[in-house]
Picture (cartoon, rainbow, N blue to C red):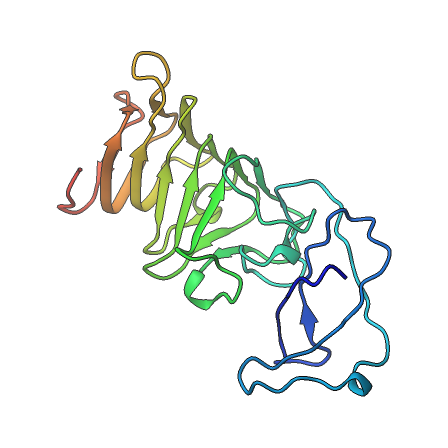
Amino acid sequence: SDGSVFSGTAASSPTTISVPLLPATVGAVTISQLTNTSTGCVSLAADRTGTATVTALTGTQGVWTGAVSSDWFNCANWENGAVPDNSIDVLIAASATNPCVIDPNNSTYAPAGGIARAKNITINKSLSINGLQGALYVSGNWQNNLGPAGFNAGFGEVKFMSSTAKQSINTSGATENFYKLSIANTSNQLTSDEVTLLKPVTVAGVFTLVKGRLLTTSSNSLTIVNDAPTG
């Protein structure tokens, strides 16, 4: 009831309008006006009768539930009702109702740029990147506990971009597979700008080294499948 404007899509009945309530203990929400942005029609006071149900999600931040869809960018799919940023550890929970998909071209909730973000990410249920524009920026560590079944890179990008700490890439499978992999760790060059491979990594598209160091070993190597540029 503070005059904020929110939006929803009338593709189904009843229509769902996402309203980020802070704090979650807000007692009442008053609908003061309804506007159809496509036609410019504005509701009359007599039209705004009845009640609205407000559900405030108060679970753990960064836990994927997939409660309503597979859309990473829909806040209703996250346990605490908030899409994570690069300060939040992400858990794609095995108990989730739906797998997780990063597909900004087919999401009405995706931000400008269409980038999904996480600090440390743990994959216990399928995570996919769809389309050429999909991207996941990770500022912490990558742990895929399902191996090949856990991550479908599609044609998307995963960028490791910490500014404060070392990072690592690990999987329960024999190899972790990416399509576009970027290393952009801007941490201290002498102590912490490292991204360490704890398992072999294969890049099917483009590998880009923007800043930082990628640490490999004879057993945990980086393989670029095609003749992609290396940055």
